[in-house]
Amino acid sequence: MGTYKEFHKRSITQREAFWNEQAALVDWHKPFAKVLDYSRPPFARWFVGGETNLCHNAIDRHLAERGGQQALVYISTETGQQTSYTFRELHAEVNRCAAMIRAQGVAKGDRVLIYMPMIPEAVFAMLACARLGAIHSVVFGGFASHSLAARIDDARPKLMMTADGGMRGGKSILYKPLVDAAVRLAQYPPHKVIIFNRGLDPAMAIISGRDLDYAALREQHMDAQVPVTWLESNEPSYILYTSGTTGQPKGVQRDTGGYAVALAASMKHIYCGQPGEAMFTTSDIGWVVGHSYIVYGPLIYGMTTVMYEGLPIRPDAGIWWKIVADNKVTVMFSSPTAARVLKKQDPAYLKKYDLSSLRHLFLAGEPLDEPTHRWIADALGKPVIDHYWQTETGWPILSAVLGVEQTPLKFGTPSFPVYGYDLQLLRESDAGEAGANEKGVVAIVPPLPPGCMTTVWGDDERFVQTYFTGFRDKLVYSTFDWGIRDAEGYHFILGRTDDVINVAGHRLGTREIEEAVQAHSNIAEVAVVGVADALKGQMPLAFAVVKDSAMIATPQLKAAHEKEVMDTVDRQIGAIARPSRVHFVTLLPKTRSGKLLRRSIQALAEGRDPGDLTTIEDPSALDQIRAALATR
Image (cartoon, rainbow, N blue to C red; front, side, top):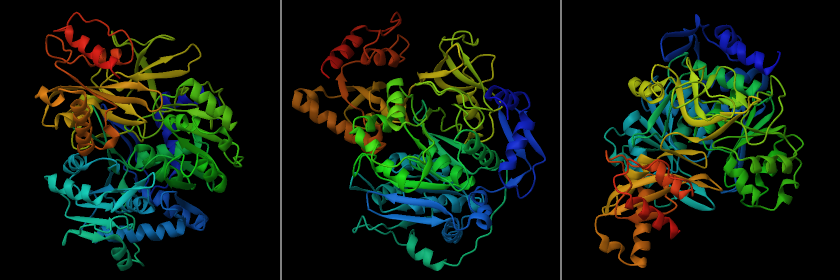
């Protein structure tokens, strides 16, 4: 196969020949006529005219050779439940679920919104939608009703699938009241809601004519055989919402054939899995990592996927390593935040279980600091691969590509551009390429490779304006991340160039949080910034101007008001977006043209120089920020 450099170069200079070879890793119902259509930049269409299906590639094509192999292993330390499904059993469950969905009038191209915890039925629902050619949109169970309603109105689903609740840390989180509130708020609510009842909410209200019971529907369709709906490669498979710099979430639209090929190739070249082996990814299906590497990637490649509901330290800090040992996991994928959590626990837990099956641990989601990278690699005695990617790309942008060449691993870096990505680091000042150890914006010269987002759902113009207009006279995709490259070609990610916060790998727009804070009736104005956090990478920090200062006249009133504002954010978005603190000030730092100086606020909060302040309208505003921070 040659070296990594040769492999990468060929993927850029002989793009069509390269991806034509990778396309052989998946099944095609109808062969494609053309590998790439890039006649309308920056929109790329891959494997044009080819017909395939994600569910077929994840399940049906494996039945003859490995029908009795475990496909899905489900472990919940929240409920004590553990079940597994062979490919044959998974096929049967997905057919039942597809029949249930079809019976509600859902057909090819219709949207189904999935708001479910980490349970097997969520996987069945995703795969059932793919089988029918319906477009699924999975919303993370931690989002509150207002955020859920915004996603309902954007996707306009015909059907919604949910559960009575999820669990975290032994406590129930009831979903149904949030769903009912979201449906009431939405302008375009779904016609039907299918509910999987876990018995967590005995008082759950059922709305007659709309709400349907998953178990009862399943009984009606026990012997269902639902044929695969073949999709042209470029027809959408799913929508996944990601935060941006506006309050309106962006629906990342993914294709079908390109995504299947990209995932299959990544399993071979990056993750180095083998059919019949087990992969354990500790993410959630509400995030892109869960889509790509809990559900589709491992199953497409004929691997067993391990799905876990629970915390990394409950019942103790050895639970993940017990899962690895019990299931002979060879490939594990987690996050830097999780590694930092485990770093605080007794190291004996890392030595307690037989980890001889584990070949690699992959970490992604936010920048991985060198001390944590070094600690986890030394503690495990295994290669730990930092790699970098986004919801928008669906699979890695930067990584060691160990299936091609065993390049040396360096701590604190996601290594090199992955095949298919024509990556450049561009200076913000003149769009020229940054030299070694010079900071630049991480950018990709289009066409984007297979598997990346094809557009923003329902808004081609927003896709172009958001991602491809960052540099004048240069059509490149901006990741909105700063990076540097050392003299040996290793890349380091330094953080965001825009107003998006990365909280434990979960992207949250500052504007979205600001709107949630302002939903409190006493808040006149607010600025939210992301501040470095030793555990989670970043945390939101809010500075708010109140309408009635009497409500914060004493320390006790101020503390009570801060809690009220945080509770408002919980209700509007969810606890995931709750600021670490809400500081009250009488004015916010702005330029004379009225632009919030978020970067200056962030710099002060992190103990850095606030930079050029010649355009500030009132310097005393920064003095208030300094004074507020001094009270932390």
